[in-house]
Length: 376
Image 1 (cartoon, rainbow, N blue to C red):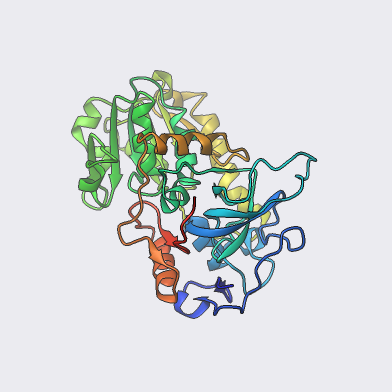
Image 2: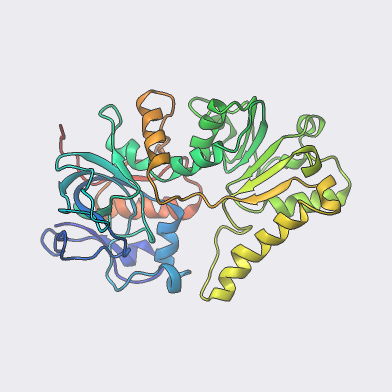
């Protein structure tokens, strides 16, 4: 079969990334071959589309190789997938019957590590997986399977009438969260991104948006006059900016924890991190989050800072995926795919897709069409 092949760590995709020739990569065999991401309860699918995520470029860079590196090189990248079921296990590892059937078109998010999906065939997990509604395209399903799940889980924390500001509103998670926040009762949604006009247009439909390269979101007068209930940081770095803003003595754009203000994030301050040890992992994720969570809930900070929460938003069940696919089927959620894509499954298309993902400036999700075969 043809498959994307990464031959080593790096960020020069021209050198390390290509699509193999037909027949040079073996088709994975259910029950014999193990998924490179080492998950259980796999099934074999014919891949239709794959969506990239920050983890795809991070794994390939080698910056987290001790924790997310492939078992060997070359390896096939890609984690979020939509495809047609070709073979299912006779029974799951827990002894039950697989709920999927040959011919089903399914979407599955990555498990453990984002790898193994960018080929004509792949072993995908059955745990965070569901059948795709007929009126949802394979490209849209791949785009929604991971990022929209995260958006749905964050949106569950939005209260009726909340005013919220979303940093990274134009990315894979943000462009879907803006839509879902409205459905969960948000009264005002503002976005921060490089293309504010896009953020205020359908389907994202922010009430207002600013370009962070031209405007400091913390200094917008209207937001100082009527502070937000929630800041959601999907880009990284908003909390240190809040601390600096507080030190200046200027009015805050977000309510304090004492006034029930909240700050939610899914990323460290620097989203482009490098981790090679457990100690580095703790310093990057645990220690800052724990300290901020405690200090914003007790003591003097409660009166000047919102309540800090780090959202670990990748469950190992399909409930949130089922919800997002249903919303898409009902026309209540529109998959946001970068207009440069979907990319073709060629050397050029593959490399352009990864370059866009690694740039951190994709407008929505980066999607690669692997096969356009018809399905019933």
